[in-house]
Length: 427
Image (tube, rainbow, N blue to C red):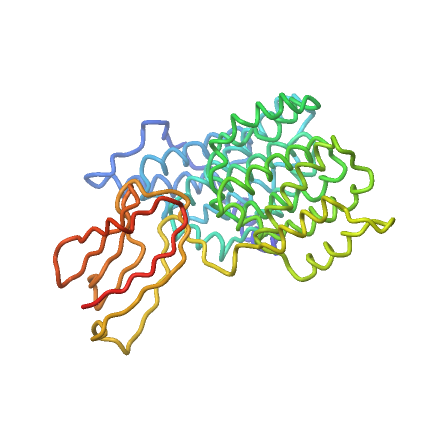
């Protein structure tokens, strides 16, 4: 499938002429005003076409950086990038780099690493905050094609860590994370030094914005996590942070179905793990959070089978996991992030019920908004007839079309991140 995607380019590359270089450097993007946007879009198309026929790795890197700069300075060019097969081109570039890798520390390897980074930076710039591009990439390119393209890069020890770091950075939309694996690996076996270094990356590990990219990362990690102890310690530290940092990250990890793999590793080391085994302790902590989020019937069955040791006594660590699974606090729910909403339409209702209505919901907020934020509204037509919002101080406010002013509800102030509003409204 991946080869068929790229086959159409083979003939194009054989016949296409070399285009003149486009001089777009940082700060030199066309002015979006006075027809500049049209010029910028044409410049984008020209650079993408030039990249298609460029062979030298360094030249590819320069073009990738120029395209990323143009997207940052003129966001309107992202559509032209997509329309020129830009995303497919990025996958193609990645798929060709494995044959250019030289010895560790060589100039050719340095050039390949720079090109890998530039591809992922450009992909992030083109996808970040751009719903049409993200939809196009996920539907017509697919994360599986991206996975195929970087497979050989991950298999090569010289480029493995930087490629994993790029996937992590793409997942979170923060390219300070590119050096995550390679930097932390240099601090081992001094785990304390590794933990200190890890704290420098924490600001970038805010929220997983592209679960599909994280899924690719996890698939590659599974290949070597059992034989690469350094990678295993780094990954456990990462998962320990993610499982308790935000609810959304925990939900994404649960969706990736990482629990069975981690539990299998935990069971395999139960008999040999000592009281001071740091890996076993961190893994148990990760599993507790995952079991609290919810486990499948098979996972729960496997857990019950491990609770009794061969001598007939209870295993204390396994019993703690069982308690976490039994008190699972998260039923089936929606996790909304960014500009998202849950909309329910009805063609039977034209106005408010004569006797009023009741809105009931359990809502968990990760943090209070910086400005008043609407989390419930009713509309008849294009405008809201009623809106319930929460302010930065946790105070709820109600506004209706009948009374054109905001009614503050002081007794409904939110003092915790969780809330259970049950508000009855009369017309």
